Every structure is written in structure tokens, then in C-alpha cells.
Length: 101
Image (cartoon, rainbow, N blue to C red):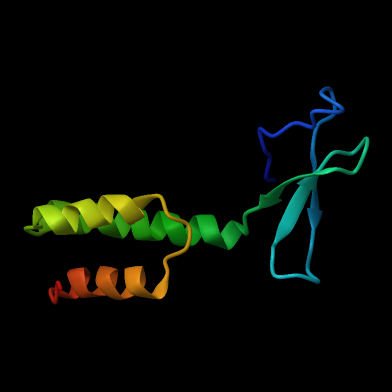
């Protein structure tokens, strides 16, 4: 189960609860159970799995292949990014396929 370090400034003793939000594009949100104040968005569990898979792929690639300083810098920049935009995704795939731009 997901948790968050965020706490409500109005109700500091209250432990945030996760409220799923299937009606919108976000997976869920953390709210204060005392005053129902929004605290932060919750990550979709698939996001973490996808990011961890990409991180493992980056580590394996960097250890097994010669990588330029520019490519290495880019790979470190996206290492902790949950979602890649189209430009990042294309460049990432090009580096892995040996077609670095």
C-alpha cells in the first residue's frame, strides 16, 4: 500500500489516506482524513514498475556498452523520471539501439 510523507498543516496528527480516483486520469490522491484536504497525487503502481524496469535497463546498458559523455548525462537525467516525453523516449530508444543522435 502506498504512503506519503506529506502531512496536513491544519491537522498535523492525522495520517493521510489514499483515495482512488478512477473518474479522472490520476490513479489516486492522498487526503487528510480529518478535514478532507488534498495533500498530493498518488503514483500508479505500474509507474514505479515501469521506471524500475527502465532503470535496470539503463544500468545494464551503461555497464555493457561504450557511452559518450553526452549520452551518459542524458541517461542520468532520465534515470529517476517517472514518465518520459516523446523527445526523451525517442532519444532513449535511439541510444539503446545504437543510433544516438
